[in-house]
Image 1 (cartoon, one colour):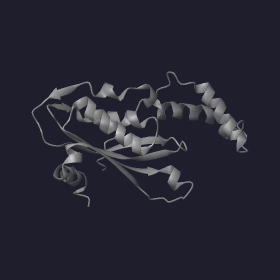
Image 2 (cartoon, one colour):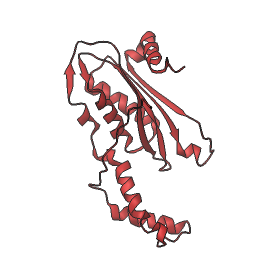
Image 3 (spheres, helix red, strand yellow):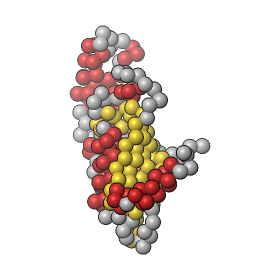
Image 4 (cartoon, one colour):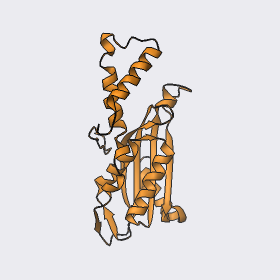
Length: 202
């Protein structure tokens, strides 16, 4: 049984021009030498349009809506949520990258519902994205919204643009991190959060 936290977004099609996407997909199929009118491909443009509406739904949602509700607590030790699974779309090739995020923060009088951290990752991931920016965006947003003493975001992902095309290196993993506040300035605090994330696995 996996202990990964999964968040499933509800498909959103408002403000998405589905017919325009369908027309573009038909053009791509024709351009690569396929017949978009053959039986197996007749519904493909509509399927792809709905898929893009879902994968890019984060463009129409402000992730801050998930940070508005917090609790006043005196707790001042590390809060960590590990293994938040996500899927995003690389903006360079429009191929998915899939992985997990680890988010830790040191509260300064405010704590947030744990599921809200997963929701923030989900919203920010559901945009044309690069992993580096995804990592930085989540960290900066949590610093701004929670006023935390420190925020640490580490993201590990498998990129299709590296595994199925180009260099074709399956099994490669990209890891990015963003350290803010005490996790950036204090070596022992940074060591503590890294131990909490990886200690049992390495």
